[in-house]
Image (cartoon, rainbow, N blue to C red; front, top):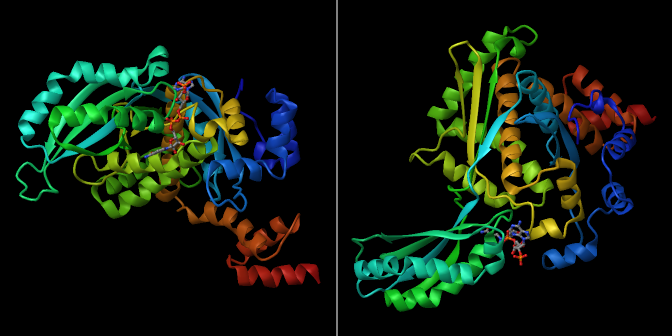
Length: 429
Ligand code: NDP
């Protein structure tokens, strides 16, 4: 979309938002039908995606606004059940936009396939034999997936390690091959598994051992995306707090997460609050992204903060986030889930690398949203305002009643379903 600034979007009703979106985006009739229908994912399609299907599980789909990444505007589809995430991401994206937007970059999309070999009569000799045949193994890997090579991807490198070298147990000592594969615009799990399996017989011959596991590593540390932002303090100013106070509060909060795993887990969960919804909306494997993100946060041997916040010489707040980002714009459920396809259209990214960069920018925004709130008023004020609506709905409020009950709950400082039920009864008398 040309712009991600849609002032007053949050104040519109759902129908009004849909109307505006259809004016901004050239949806086909079929896309509109899927996006705005009561059953966006048909049971027939769902039944082909997983086993034992009995229905579907819908999530709210919202739009993260105001995002500007490397000078390009992005409207970000976010599928999430948690209140305040979309609002917070959009709010911070607006601040960062006024500071020049997010700057991002991504490495080549190189994923890792692992092959485990056990029971080699001589592990050192096995390692040498594999390394000697490295080029021909890479050639074999590429021969097993010619379409990937034709796209400019394919196997690029191979490494071998011996694990548990001193182990006396027959289960302990093993040879591990890493085959590095550029999966282009696909996440690549199936591609890599296919390649790893195709190499197994040759590897067994070379090592005189037995191959067990042949599967990708979800720790995609050669498939990284990075985002950063530089925010002058005056843009951080908020009611009762100077920009400098907010900036320092954010840095103190970061240092806490960097030094304490108990805090880091919550800090990082907040980052994934921004990342998971876009990964889910775009039909990507969010478990893979989650697993790799947390492993990356522990890469120095101690679990810490995924982000880094600091102050530069001019006193600006500087935020950085680097994560493995094994997402795709093709393959997996992207090709079958109608909403995932539409989400890609709304997001308008041309490659998996571009998608990965937008995702880390959203993660960085989400983190600043949480830290800014925590370092000032605390998150409950904003969070509970939104939470009160879910509580009102849980108590049976519908239509215009939802906002009225939600406001009463806030006014009376009692955001509980029991209280909401009393108010609903009172309202419907
Ligand atoms: P696919 O198996 O769908 O493979 C992607 C396919 O897309 C390629 O084989 C290729 O087919 C086609 N393609 C078209 N255009 C491109 C392009 N520009 N770049 C690359 N490929 C292109 O998906 P993935 O291999 O990505 O696997 C992802 C799925 O695997 C996810 O659903 C994930 O949940 C699941 N999975 C995850 C695991 C894990 O994380 N541990 C384990 C196993 C599965 P062609 O070359 O024939 O045109």
